[in-house]
Length: 425
Ligand code: ASP
Ligand code: MG
Image (tube, rainbow, N blue to C red):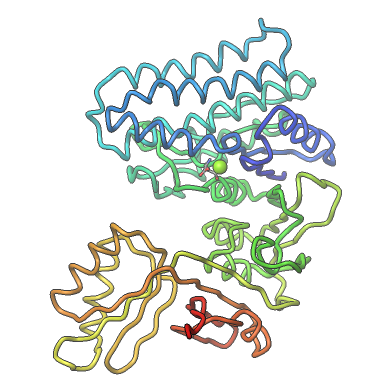
């Protein structure tokens, strides 16, 4: 029993769906569950739709029309016979959102968000399942909301593992004996059967949930890169694929911002010791990266870049020391404003923190902190994290940079920096 996860880029158009179907049909004959994301950038468009609806913006109609057209264009390419039942099936799914959009947006915004945004995955999975059926596969479309049970934290549903595992074992396991099952990433449901989502880019996490509950033999995440690389090709000319990675290193890389795998993905499969393969849907025969419980050390230093960082330094107003009481007060304000810390360093009289710069959150945080502390801040910074660093790698990334903060542990170095301003004459 294996699990395959396909992200939005792999199913962005008809050619993508055909390619994914070929990967599925050409696998060695094992039982298979397929977890799929919304097509291309549809989730972003559905987020725009939700925003427009909440603001009473007449653009609602136009945005939704674009979403529908996008999918119907793909259907036209895949199913020349317009009598095919998939046309009605997709149209009916959209009608449910039409109904919702006709009402005034009286419910909580996060609840509304989940009801709208989740349809991206519903329609992509229906299209993929219908195309596989057209290729004579024994395929069953399954609604992930019947399996993935969450609390009612909309937009960030917290998984009820016990209920989820029980439902998957009871209903899904027998189904997989005869069928390839196609289901959605990213979505779940509350105990009252309302749709929740698991946070942006949450489909990897969904795939990990299913894999863990099914005790899968492996999970394969199919990406548009040849595996996990030691740096993002966007920032580095020479990148290397890492053939073998330990769960531990994978968690560290994901945590520090390597976007190849969602950070929540590793833990559930590590607990069950399920290997995770990251492979390219563009070169399905190529090797990729195997993430396992092996205790191997990354073969090369790895670099993770984040731009648009803010750095704030906090000082007690009375020049007392930064003590535990102050720290607990400071952390609770970060928590209150939902600011996720990327780096931190404390000294006797100051505490410095870097995080992704969101102007609204930054202002609110500074306002609160300023009641008790003196605050200094910088924005427009870069953060580089080097896993398995040495002086050479640090020198390489800090050429022409001013370093504002440097934090080192045994295996990881983090540097907050900005471009050196050329001296004016
Ligand atoms: N479609 C969702 C998103 O784009 C989930 C995912 O792709 O993982 O955030
Ligand atoms: Mg996506």
